[in-house]
Length: 169
Image (cartoon, rainbow, N blue to C red; front, side):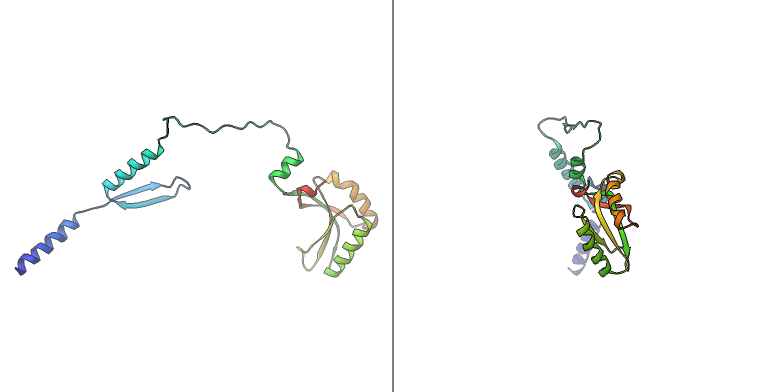
């Protein structure tokens, strides 16, 4: 009886040893990442059958999405602003100072002298501070304001800077 039990256990182990899973490598449809699965051939066939049914729709031909035709022309300012609210433009650099207090004082003085121009401080050059004015799409649009600013601040100049599209002239 003991030998019969040993023989049965050994036969069972060898029978399960012979069962092998198929190794399948597939590509992910979204990112192209390789995915590896170890599964039985019958399971793989069943999955492929299900996937094949999912791909079918009312007809065998796949419809292409409608193409949108765009005229070859320059975009208007409103169209540019709709796509990118912040774009590379220009600002007038009024002065560069060494302290925040001095930058605040010059900003308020600038606001009193030029009420139509928005002024801001930029601390990206710490410990120095830039006092910037206006927002412009091009250097030409900033030129007239620069002439007026240079009367009080001779070191003022136009610099490239990221501006909010809706504020730019």
